Amino acid sequence: MQFGRTTLSKFVIEQTRGQHSEMGALLIDVAAAVKTISAMVGKGALSGFSGALESTNVQGEVQKKLDVLTNEAMLRHCEWGGQLAGMASEEMDEPYRIPEKYPRGRYLLIFDPLDGSSNSDVNVSVGTIFSILQRDEAGDAEAADYLQPGHRQLAAGYAIYGPATMLVLTVGTGTHGFTLDRESGNFQLTHPDIKVPEDTREFAINTSNERFWEPPVQRYVEECKAGKTGVRGADFNMRWIASMVAEVHRILMRGGIFMYPKDNKDPAKPGRLRLMYEANPMAMLIAQAGGAASTGRQRIVDVAPEALHQRVPVILGSKNEVERVERYHHEYDTGADRPFVSPLFSDRSLFRDPA
Image (cartoon, rainbow, N blue to C red; front, top):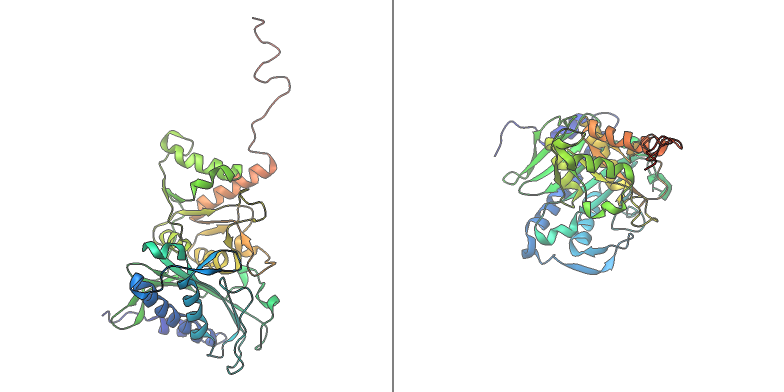
C-alpha cells in the first residue's frame, strides 16, 4: 500500500470546491462504478459474462454481455446521488431519466461503459469513457440539453482496464492519472499533470481502410511509412489496438497520433467514432495535456452536435503532428496540394524533339 499519495476522492474534492462541489461527489460515484466494472472485466472467462447477445445497440452493433452489464453498473452507481439531471450512453437509444425516487441535480453524465468491448474476449485492454456537462438548473433533462459542443464540458475522463486499472481525469485544470490500489480499494494519484510531447514518431491508424481515406490522410500516412528516405526524414512506428481508450492512453503516456479519419467506405457515416461520449471527452483530456484534437478541418470540441449518437472523424495526439494533418486537409480543400499543370508545358512541351 502507498502512503502519502493523494487519493482520487481528496483530489476531486479539492478541485471542485465551491461552484461545482456536487460534481466532485458525482466523480466519486463514477469512480465507484469503475471499480465495479474493473472487477467484472478482471475475472475474464471466469465471470461467465463473455460472449455476445442477440441484441444490438442504436448503432447496429452487436452487444456483448459486458456492454449491458457495465452500462447497468454506471447507471446504478450514479443515479441516486442527486447530482444528475439525466444520463446518456452508447448502449441506450435514448437518454436515461433519473428514477422518481431520487432527487435531480443539474449535471449530465454521458458515457461509453465499455469502449473496445470486442477485445474483451481476447484479453486486450478495454475501458470506460465519460463526460460531464451541465444544464441551467436542476430537474429532468430533455434530449436537447445533451447537445452541447465539447468546449462546454466541465469534466472528462476514462478508465483503462489493463495490467493495472487506471482512471485518467480532467476537471479543466490539467490531465491527471490515478491507479487503483487493489489492497486499499483507493485510486491513488500516480501521474499528475500529464503532458503529451509536441512531436512524435508514432502513429496509430487502421490501414485496412487505406483505400477509403481522403487524399490528405493518405498523404500523411505515406510520408510516415517512407521514413528516413521520404520527405519527413525520420522513421515512424505504427500501432493499432482497436480500442480507443488504449490508443489514447498510450499517447498520454509517451506521445503519438491516433487517427480514425473520415472515409468513403460508408458515405452515410461522416466518421466512425461518436462525438459526445468518445471524441469530446478524449479531446478535452488531450487538450488539457498540451495535445490537440481535430476532425481534420476543425477542433473536435467546436463541432455543434445535432444528435446524441452523432459520429465524427477523429485525429488527436501530439500537437505538431495533428496540425500537420490539419494543414494537409486545408491544402487539399483549397487545391494547394496539387502540382502546377500548364496547358503549354506539360509532359510534352511545344519544344519537343520531333523524333
